[in-house]
Image (cartoon, rainbow, N blue to C red; front, side, top):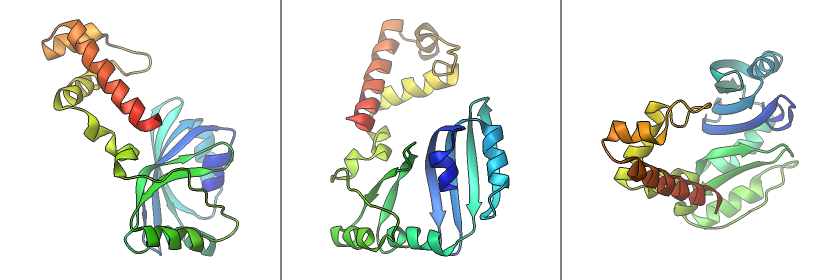
Length: 199
């Protein structure tokens, strides 16, 4: 599945949002932007895909749960990063150049051992070293309770739908506040989330 997610022309963007690897089984939940029909055809042709479930969100995006057979090469790749007290922090981003980026947290010596034990042909590059506050999973905790409430309301009324089906005025009406107040909370929340993800 790695080759499909990272290198297929019909996948514009793929993110593994959660996985479970037990040594004898691998299940991965992906969010994919691209051509769901082509993705489904490709999965049906891969012998290592033991099963899958696809939830289409629209014509260009879907969630896909994939259960993979545990091959020798898959074990060589996953065993080092799944041992000891290491935690892989979602999301796991697939890039068009074939690279995969993710955050890992754990004791320094265990991280070093995992890096050393990842097998060829995988090259490991450390892009940055930091604490948990820099991981994408920590973004939500950076919002105030009010910002979280406003963002959740905006999602519920359709403000973040594509195309947008609600305005800032609709969000404000739902919250019982002035449109300028809703707009300010949305801007601050979006700023915090984007800075946490990309800064």
